[in-house]
Length: 558
Image (tube, rainbow, N blue to C red; front, side, top):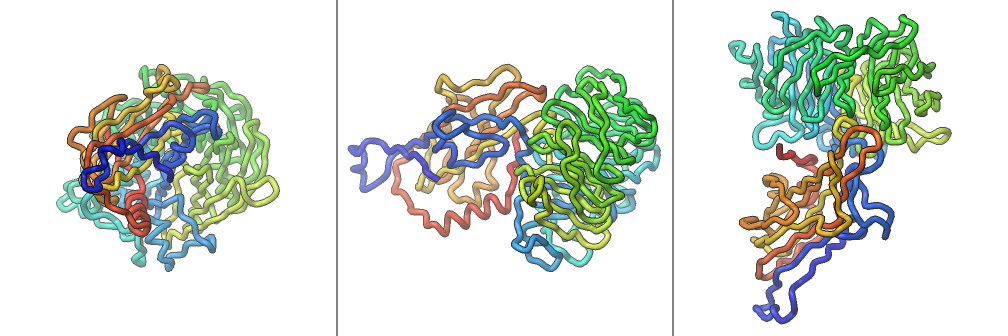
């Protein structure tokens, strides 16, 4: 990392060898490359010298959320984990200290579970539907945080039956009707009883609220993503199975036993015409969406359909396996389908041509793309999850490069968004750039933050740039510090600490062809005059490991 620390004039250095106020400036490719991009880039070297969104956005999170239907839990995986053997066993230290981050109950004791769908929100947290819950004519969903903060939470270490899953006693039935008052794990943030029974459909909108649909009674409703408050429910027959919300705010909810997928305008509150696959024998199952807003629908009879954003049927294609369930789309607009009955994954180009069929574990169901554009598949029958590298494996590319054992009884299911690639790539496209700077001085007084002062900076209508920062004297403390948002020329009065972490979030509309905002420059200044402290390399590496390893994901300010 090359920081451009501009010290004040040498004449001021007469104060007992002290260093003076300095500036950290980011304005060209070399500067931006000091930080970390997630679905963003700085353009070709020497060309753009700016931060903008990638044309094909995946997700900014290095997380995979797995619905472990057989253990009534959710398992959190670090998608950036690598293993030289390509396999993480339950005996490996990595199972608890790298690949698996934690395991969390999805229902209180005494309540029905069997989670099968997941959807990741704009903070990297997950909402999960419990498909067996229908008591009292109501279903249930749970929200689990990827960054629970202070308190007791799962360590992710295998204990013989789970990855250190904590109890949710539900003493006296306290949480029967909603709430998490008796959950031991602070990561479990919401438990909501819903009008829909046997919930399958679950999707996040651009406001970070969750839409849930019951397969049992077809009732759908919106749930506030922060408070868990529910809106009045409505019947969205024949939906209630797979689900997603596109860049136009339209909820797609597949029908399973029919050839129809229900559509609902979440912005205007209007039910739209169904998307219909010709030949009524097709079951509308899993859903995925590409960069042009086209929705891809898998069918159990080895077929794959493509629909335009307005619901027009564009074609149905023969698959490379049997029992299509989960669907995902990689940044190259290739479409991937998990085939449960043939234990394969099919890869199609965007015209529906089969590129390759890849053998995976037993009964694959869920499939998603991670922040590196790699594909993950959950194998229900073999209790594991596999990562496929679309660029590796020889002919036509694509091969399994990592397998993570989830333990007996996991039965991973979820053919829905496990990584946040739908909400972060299509529903509300977003990406980040982040960096940590070191003033070299304990207790540094920070002065100003300025950004987009150059003419090249722009925020077109409908797009956005949010610049946040936090400060601390150690890297470990920095990971727990509170984020604050700053305008284009704000004072940092009262902000102190040797280190500053900067986080820039860029957003654009989910409609195809929408422009990207541009961050042309960013500058932080300090006003402290103290003796600088050296930072040994080992301290930097240790601190960074704690910051990015233990924290892994920022908690976004709402």
